[in-house]
Amino acid sequence: MTSKTIQVNHLARVEGEGSLYIRVDGDTVQDVHLKIFEPPRFFEGLLRGRAFGDAVDITSRICGICPIAYQMSAAHAIESALGVAISPGVRALRRLLYCGEWIESHTLHIYMLHAPDFLGLANVVEVAREAPAVVSRGLALKKMGNRVVQVIGGREIHPINVRVGGFYRTPSIAEIRALRPGLEEALAHAQATLEWVMTLPLPELRREHELVALRGPGEYPMNAGRIVSTGGIDIAAAEYDEVFEELQVPHSTALHSNIRGRGAYLSGPSARLRHNADLLSPLAAEAYRRSGYAGLLDNPFATIIGRSIEVIYACEEALRIVDGYDAASAANATVTVGAGEGRAVTEAPRGILYHHYRIDDGGLLTHARISAPTSQNQKAIENDLRAYVQAHVHDTPESLQSMCERTIRNYDPCISCATHFLRIHWERMAQERAP
Image (cartoon, rainbow, N blue to C red; front, side, top):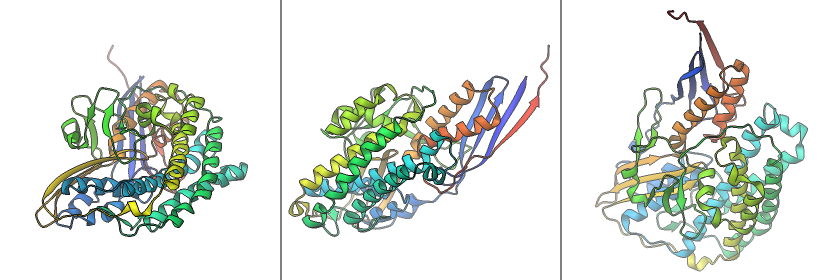
């Protein structure tokens, strides 16, 4: 019998520093560890003792690509703790801001990080050489997402305009309506993106995960909804800790999220579409039907299709909000300082993002907990790696290296400029068995 150890020392396209370890004994995969070894960043500890309003700006620094998700979950959780009811105009403007983030984040992953895998190319530079018009379309689409974030948030990276109760500055009607031509063009680019993505060859891997997402109320989820799953979960954000838990594992400095008593689950585009396809906008709903994605939800390599559908939705939804925008209705809510406890869940591009805060009488944070999508999906990624390697246990090291990279990248666990992020060391040993 032969034993093999796949040792990947550096992962560059995960949130922070990571590596991969896989041990195969004969024909059986024994261990799979996606190791996140970046030193703890202590954001939760940093928040304790700070004024409650600081959480919105501080947590946005957790991610440069998805700062809106952190700002929205922080603002909503603190507003829940303080009993703040935001106006319909603020709610719509926040949703528009979230649309901008979905457009730019999904587009970056589709074109720059994920597509080269399907084309057999090393990176987006090679894609640009072979198909410059395709990459130009992706860049234009991402630029429009950035533009939406800049107009509402004050700048493209780590926006500065979001506050508890609303915004520091409300954009004028003229500023918002000026986004319409660019969004119309972006919608056309998004539709062309899906047509292109549907031509890409998909590896075959079927995985049954418990799919967790927000649902409703009456709209495709971004900022609000109940937490639902294919396993029967249906709870409010306030009940999150009763159903989900975070565990420390020896091989990672990042916590693993589990459903209590059940284990791993999956959040993100496939989960959102599984629970909310009936709430898609008209063009996005047609794209979902035409793409056949309903029959591909269990193929992790097909998430590039799901992200493309959600870009169409975000462009349509942004246009709807732009057309109905009324600056007068976007007035900030009154915020009264006091003690309280609040929780909130929103949908980051990669999946659900949970924030939990406690505030004392003086308005200082006494407790903060954040569960990011990457942490929540880590165990599902490990399970996918185990399944793929088990099904291809006799493949060459080079082939397994490539497909392990692709398997991890399906989840868009982070953004980095690295191209090849797995260096796999195989250790082969002949093992003698007693007769």
